Image 1 (tube, rainbow, N blue to C red):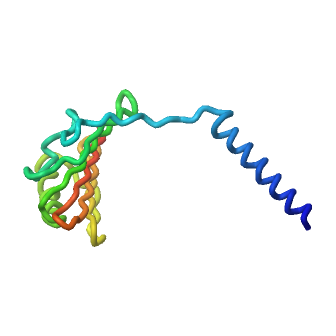
Image 2 (tube, helix red, strand yellow):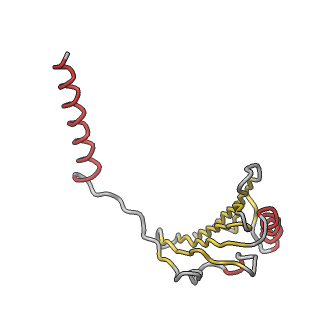
Amino acid sequence: MLRWGVAAVILIIAVAGIVWWLLGAGKGVIASPAPIFAPQGQLVPQFPKGLILDNNTVINGSYAVNYSSSTDQYTAIYDSSSTMATLYGDYQSYLPLNNWTVTGSLTTHPTFNAIAASQGSDQLQIVISTQSNGSQVTITYVTK
C-alpha cells in the first residue's frame, strides 16, 4: 500500500513539472498589454469626457490599454452622489441621443446595474454599483 502512495506522489510531481515546463519555462508566456494610468483624479486624455454625466464626481481611476494597432480600451471609474437608479436612467436617455445603440442592460441585481452599447464598431460597457453615499460607475470604452 505504501508503494502505491509513493508512486502516486512521484506521478503528481512529474505531471506538475511537465505542466510547468510546457506553460512556463518551455514556452514563452503571452503577456497582456500593460495599462497606462492617468494621474490620480484625472481621466486619460482619450476617454470621452461626455460619458461622465454627473458634474459632481470624484475620479477614482482611469487607464488606457492598447491591444493592437486598431483596438484600444479606455476605462474610467468614478464616484457619484447620485443613486444607481438615477444614473441608470440618465445613461439610458443619454446614449441614444448621442448616437449610441443600447445593446443590452441588466437591472435585476440589487447592488448594480449594467448597460452595453455600440456606436459603429466601438463598444461601451457601463456598470453602476450602489454605495452608502451614492454610486460608483465604471465605464469601459473600446475603439476598433
